[in-house]
Structure formats: structure tokens, C-alpha cells
Amino acid sequence: MSVRFSLQQMCVFSVMMAVLLAAGGCSGTGKSGDDGKMYTLGSDVSVGQLTYTVVHSEWRESLDSEEGPRLPKNKFLMLTLRVSNRGGGEQGVPLLTLVGEDGKEYREEDKGLGVPQWLGLLRTVRPSETENGRILFDAPQAGYKLRVLSGGDVESEKSALVEIPLHVAPPPVKSVDPLATPPAK
Image (cartoon, rainbow, N blue to C red):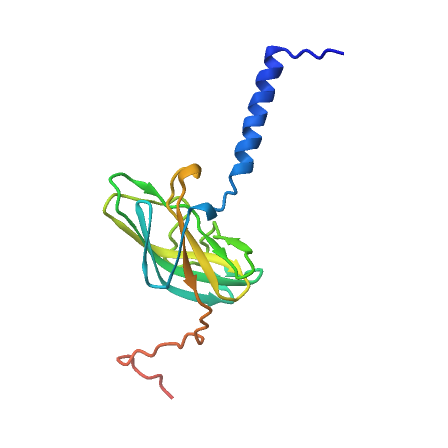
């Protein structure tokens, strides 16, 4: 029995095989681009044209927003960071990922409701400039590694890991203005 394929069928088959092979070779996590070095909170981490500095981490039970309290499935981890562009052209800053000790990954939240100075969803940094802001994750309270990315093409994406230790700060204390008039009794 002889099987014949039309030229159109052969082209469709070839395209499908190329897509499957490409998808199998890309995990999408950037792990193959990790430089192997673990960076600490507060360190400058250069990945491609971008330099990240995770300045502060803070766990939250909820966030106050204009629409009322925003509650997480687990807990909110808010990271304050700086992103600088050392390149010659505008550079996009991708959404980032937390990696747990067990290898489980948590994507950055794509909504900034209740996040003061939210870095934003679509973010770019102009050459020789720095953007400051906060990003948010919903994850179980634990120590993590933050995977920062170069923002390059999927095939050439570079990444590095920043250790985010479990640090639980005491609840914020309401500040008292020393110049305020005390309430009348």
C-alpha cells in the first residue's frame, strides 16, 4: 500500500513538527540561562542590559484598596526593587517569578490594586535610567528565590536568582506626629 501526501499536507506537517520541537526545547522558565550564582537581598544583579536590586521584602495578610480589602489565596509578598537599564535602547522588564525550596514557582501578580508605587504591568526602562517600585506575589509564607530576567528573546533569555529570606516584620506601628496637638480630654 502506497501513501501519498499533497504538497500542502507536507507543509502543514513540517510546520507542526517544527512547532512541537521548538516547544519541547523551551521550558519557558529561563532556568537554562541562570548564571549559577545566588545573589542576596540588596545586591545589584546584572542580567543582560538590566540591573535589578531587591531593596526590601514585606509579607502582608491583605492590601487596602479603593475597592476594599484585597485578600490573597496564601499571603502577599511585596518586593520593593530598582531596575536600571545599562543598554543603549529602551528595555522591557518582564514579569518575574518566585521559586520555592521545593521548586514550585509563583508568577508575579498582574494587578497592582492596593500596591503602593506598583511597578506596573507593561513596564519599560529607558537607557541609563532607573525605575523604582513594588511588585506583588501571592504565595505561602516561606523563603524564596526571585528569578530576575534579562527581558530578551526566549531563546537568548538570561536569568539570575536573588535569595528572598523569610523575614517577618512586626505589624506596622502607627506613627505619632510629635508636633500634633494632643486630643482634648
